[in-house]
Length: 286
Ligand code: PRT
Ligand code: ZN
Image 1 (cartoon, rainbow, N blue to C red):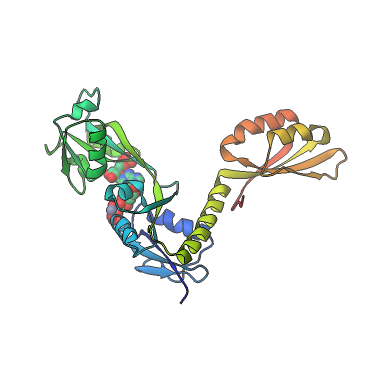
Image 2 (cartoon, protein in one colour; image 1 turned 180 degrees about the horizontal axis):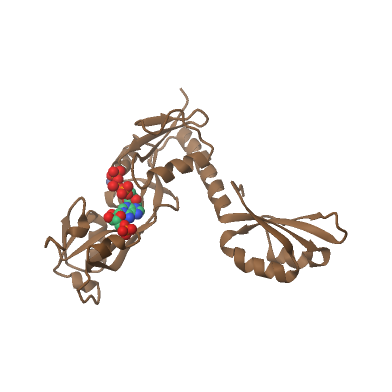
């Protein structure tokens, strides 16, 4: 039987939808629905394992799954021997310290001698050690934000995204100790046959990611403006210039990074560009 790459993803939760979306965008089609424990593909040698996110680092460290998608916060907290293959750019959040909003907070020294409730004892103790703070860590598995209100702790260390959970529990964020996003992790002793499949998968993921950060741009310009426009639009190699039916005019095509887009558009207009079209790129192979 030929090799199949086993990818562990969260079965139900914040990471599930985006994890499946990545697989779809790579053109990988699954045989059965995503409600089962596992699912295989008919056009790519991959099998998905649907797990609780907390179990994914263990499965990957043991080689039961070859790779997995999990929040960096969970991967680092578990402290397993795993490879960090790639950040995936979704489920961004931070792990922060928070205290009741009435506290007059000046510095992290506030936590000296205090009790902090968290589900992330390892990341928190690494932070406290690095700051030479001597605090007591009280590990709880859920609803950390209610701990100060019921007198269980002086402060908390928890995942924050919008910050509204803290506010509605009368807390304020005082230190960001860890920034997280979804990451692809891998088994450290992956076989060479599986590594070859993984390389193909990563190539596809990067093509999709490059497509997302770039846009395809088409514009018309008088021929005498072409040189200046090319300077503004370096493109992948060099922009495509095609003659228009109208004498003395050309159409110029190129790729442009989304975050450079507005600034360049202004310059292009000044240089004489007209009829500018900007369209999404589905995939981009560099
Ligand atoms: O059942 P299973 O164990 O698989 O799932 P889970 O409940 O443990 O995890 P899940 O699905 O809640 O989160 C999975 C991952 O998403 C986390 O490990 C983070 O990497 C990431 N993530 C991104 C978040 C958030 N944003 C987030 N806002 N994880 C949790 N939260 C919670 C947080 O705990 C707090 O209660 O949302 C609340 C804060 O949100 P704001 O927007 O009010 O600040
Ligand atoms: Zn979990």
